[in-house]
Picture 1 (cartoon, rainbow, N blue to C red):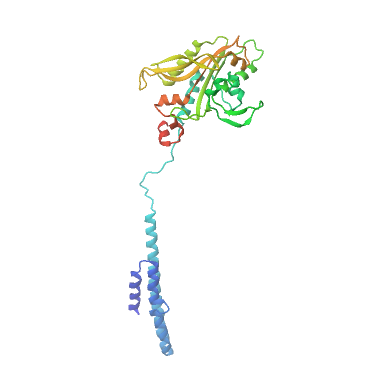
Picture 2 (cartoon, rainbow, N blue to C red; picture 1 turned 60 degrees about the horizontal axis):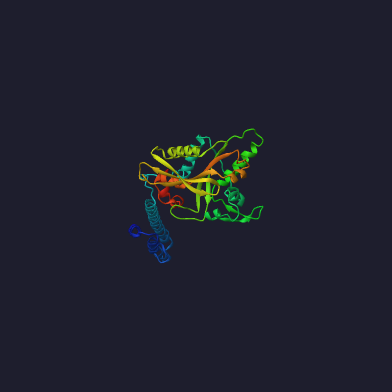
Length: 344
């Protein structure tokens, strides 16, 4: 009997998978197995022999079942060990920390612009990006069919204003100058002397345009200073000071080049040239400006015979390109974190 148990243990030990172990089990404990054949032989023995022989066979069966259970446990433990090894966590590797975000470079520029002009006494105005035709065009001396409207490729919205004209995505932030000035004039109506209007209007604007230096969605920052004695000299002083502080250098020069804008008269493009760095000696356009047109002053709700001032408009996206040395505006808005992460 002991020899049969040893034979079963040897057979079970050679099984390397649960299926092989079940095949080995059948050779000893199956319907045609060795132990079953011994049980069948009891029928030919006497009663006393059956008791003795039966006890021996039961002991044999228990020994084989114990060997089978032990091998099953060993195979299960081996399988678990292999699984744990395959799925093991290497605690010596560095952890995967959650990435830390940062402000978009254009957002940094907008905050910088607001801080600089805020220190000069300018308020910051914000308003709707969907505008009426009157606010976006007419109030700024762009009446219907005026040639200046063709200078701006406009996105229109499928809804009409009180005059039956379609709303549009604002093509500039100048409508906020109108809204702010009208609210300011209404607030101080009847006052002996109205406080000066100093305001900038940064925000998103939209035009049908896309190339290396233009995007269908882009940012603008319009500025307005209206008072009883505000001149081009003030415009030059304010914008020169802004550029020097924005680019953190005195080694630059500004040039006011005659131009045309329907909402200012006279008008000028503002160019900048750096005295050092990679852009040294090149004149670059950074803003448009001019004395506010009398018709626009009237639309502010003010008397153009009494109040005068200047307005300017610049592109924060372009200023960001100059500040960081980027030559394609579209990179700022493609959402590539490999590009944006360097500005954190």
